[in-house]
Length: 416
Image 1 (cartoon, rainbow, N blue to C red):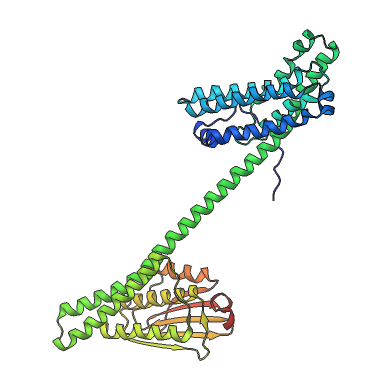
Image 2: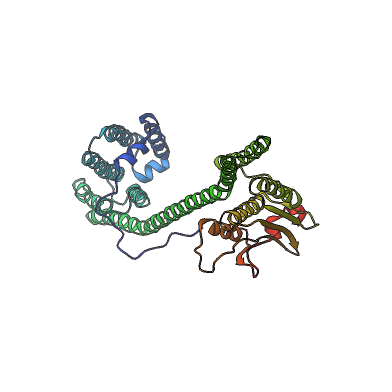
């Protein structure tokens, strides 16, 4: 994990970065908040119940408990006020007041015993460091001023109580310096942590945006490559019916139209539900291609021949989808745009590569023809599986589509 970086830039804002909606939500139920404060205060008071600690600090358990009771009471009031604050400035005023009062209560632990040499100044220093570490508040001049100036305000209190004049100044000054130094050092780390958090959030947002864009691209491509050909076949059946056919052919045409509609519905359900298609073998995929060819032959008198390697291979669902979609798009283009009457499809395993080849005897493709969505989609599908895609005009007319995919990326592990 990357460590937060120190920064030499001035990291402070003017005031704590209070956000009413966020901070009020973070307060939770009043009972839970009060219970957290009570438990923390109990842990703080316990050490003063032991005589050695009480003698060393000059603070008895009763006095410590009284200060803690004041703290809990104020926190309960502050929580209620914060939750009911209706305007930004009222909430802001309460939070800033809470900051200074909590610092004052921490200093009271040091002032009550009357000895400026007390180690109880550490509570004020710890509170300052805790605020510096808060990414919700962020490093700010308000917290730094509270941590620096409030310890110095205890100097006249020690002098009025007759404490040693030198330590009455030195003790609070040391506490002020320690609080300021601790706050600043931790604030620099906090700025680094906040920058890392912002970078992480920005990176996550970019990933979410890319994933959403990829999902939209996949959806558009699947709709174009699967539903489009099915609807085209249905349209061809409709054209045949418009031309008029013998009554004896109506049942045959109706059967073909129903089969095409079922294919389209199956593809649509798979797209809408996000269910990946089942795996297939090379031979079963070739059989599906032949069934499609039989329907095309009925509709448009097109001859479609399918051949495949003798070596049968179990294909991953993603490979099955890619091969099927490219086959559908290539045959659709050959018939619709090329006017082909014969299409040849080959599924060949050659070493570490599976090659799908679709050739036709149509008009071919012009070299300067713009790349449509279907062509772009076929190339993208091949690239996603680490393969290559080539579309070229045949010397004697027609078009050849070749997609080569690496076997390790498309075959099930047991088949590789």
